[in-house]
Amino acid sequence: MITKKLTSIRFDEDTLEKIEKFAKERDYWKRSDVINNVLKAVFENFNEKQIYDMVCIYRWNKNIVNVEFEITDVLKPFKPL
Image (tube, rainbow, N blue to C red; front, side, top):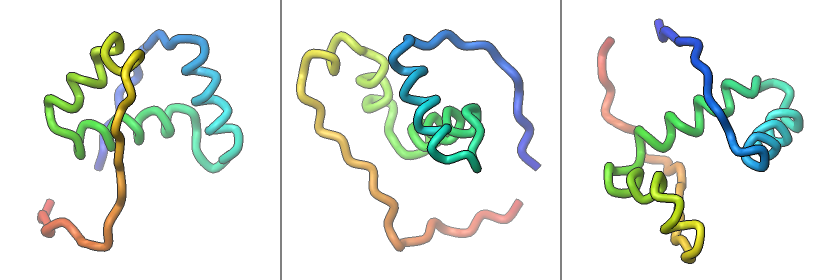
């Protein structure tokens, strides 16, 4: 069972507008699910340096960024609960 915690976060207005637009177009996902799933994908699939670079907005805000996120057909090894 996955436990979730309620928290408060401040978003830039333009970022929140993009999140809300994305969630509104897909009414089967709540806004919090969209945010949680994006963050989960980042923290489970990118390494610490890549995440650090994402946090350093002054670096990627002015530079061209090479980004790729692709789900393959290769399954991860089974981990029993």
